[in-house]
Image (cartoon, rainbow, N blue to C red; front, side, top):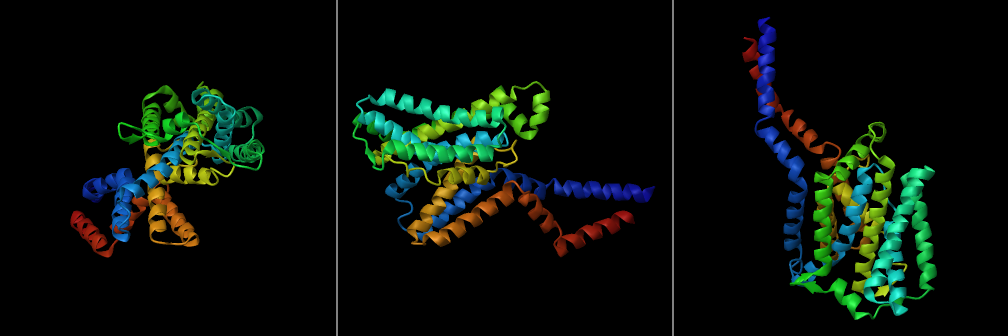
Length: 356
């Protein structure tokens, strides 16, 4: 009896130690590792290139990241439900050529932008219909839609770039408001709204439930089909908005714009800690993931690293981030530290003392 009591008391003491300094360290790392990684990368960039912290370079990073951030927010909601959207890069290209064509025809900037956004939202809604009503898996449905949108963009473009000379459109989406670039202002507002919706609204809570267990959510009476349609429509709408920003920055519409953006958005969401199985993550972490990847690519460009090694390094960073966030890497590292011989001997000594 006393042996069992002593063993129990030792287990309690061990648990106490686990919930002490080491437990607090595990909790801190699991919640803030992404921000710490971002800080480390910025410091590394400062030492690797004297041009890294210049205003011009920071502006380049923000301009690129603001577009991917919008895609990442929309992609996050889709991934949260356990799906994936491979069509967002093609929707960006579609958005640029449609708005460029409308502006060239003489349409004003606001109605041209609104029509473009509605068209892109309908494309996203079409993805939702393929997934919900037709029953095609999200990977195949959005992959097919990506091919369709790439073809439509090329047809609309008619094998030549469509220039944009509408100053209202260009200045409105690439200018500044109070010294803050418009793309930055837009993606910050979108991120805040998305974070609020995912945390404090019934819609956001339902999406977490759908991603966690879609069948249980359906049996509980949640409007799973409706929410999925809204989610894919939202992803298409944000991709259209990203396309408008890209068109304003480049002052042209092209079917080549947006190539690979879908992979960058997915990678950012995963680096931000979301699970491809659904039910986990938050929009703010996805946006931080965008900047982590964007800054890494920027540092490698400044350091003169060629594209092939960049792919290797970028892939390694994604693997490490997924290990720490989704694969229980922090817990595994903590458990490995606790098995260090010195720590193990201390635990065994405490066990013997308790047994006596």
